Image 1 (cartoon, rainbow, N blue to C red):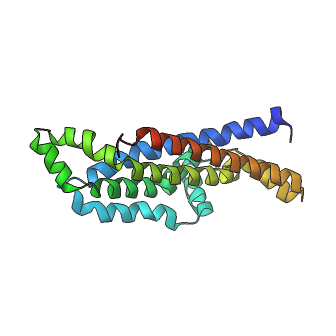
Image 2 (tube, rainbow, N blue to C red; image 1 turned 135 degrees about the vertical axis):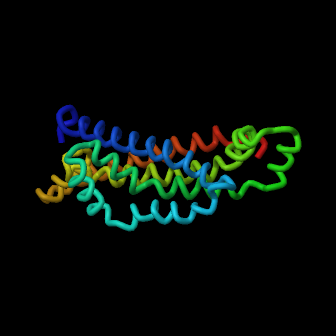
Image 3 (cartoon, rainbow, N blue to C red; image 1 turned 30 degrees about the vertical axis):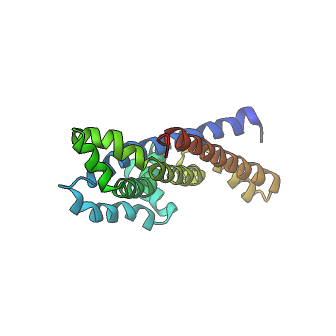
Length: 204
């Protein structure tokens, strides 16, 4: 359980995997969710959600093995697998958040001369922020938890310490790894709550 040679590198690997997988989920799911709520594309929304749901329909371990066979070992493979696994909450919440915006509010914005893009950026997205951020927080916690399995395909992370504690029957080692993962999850969730409060439109 040496901090410098064991725990700190594993914590860094864990944070790196969780950060990049969540960032990629946001970069893919939010624009896709916006696109699927536009009138010309809305009809294919259910089909896309079904495809996105297929990631979580598979067991986490099985999904990692599939991408191991396709991409080989390493943290990049874990990140890609986590993006597929966690994309559904952000995509679904983005669509739900945008669809829940009051139509009369949008019509009022257009009546003031706003273009469709201005309506999206100034009205729809700000009002949908709480729902979208809730989905992002869910995906973030999923990725932090799933990152504990990264060691199975050479991705590192705190799962190494947890696995060592299990194999050696060393409860202190197991607890240290589990507590560190829990602290990372709680910290990221707290940051997500701060982001939600900061991004929430004033006066709502």
